[in-house]
Length: 176
Image 1 (cartoon, one colour):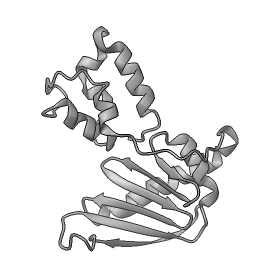
Image 2: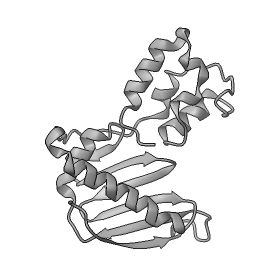
Image 3: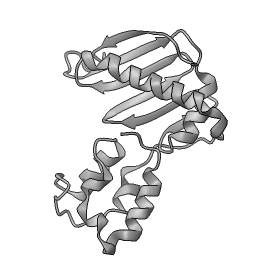
């Protein structure tokens, strides 16, 4: 196990005092720098900067940032969810580290997935079957990890089969 212990601080972001959202910072007792290239290989939609030793991605509406001795998660709904979110990320770190022999590490610098890239692969019908008012809104939520691809019913018809396959490849590695 690479990551064994950490200390949490939960706070309301200073740029938005009194906000209904929370941020958690976990200061790590263990250096996780060695796992970042493995996580970069696994999390295809993460933005990674090897020189800065930083990996960021979105999952379930949260922005997550990893540095050698820190986990930061923003946009939490309440203080109580902070510990469970950090534990989930710590588990991901440890699972990835345990599987490192099966993973080819990557130091490739990637940028975050852009909603317009996703939108171009959606049907563009604005049918609202996914529960969103427009396909672009659905694309925004999909790239933020707040929606699942299977909520777009038209994508699962023969007409959009090729676009769905391209979109699934593009979204590969997004954690739910």
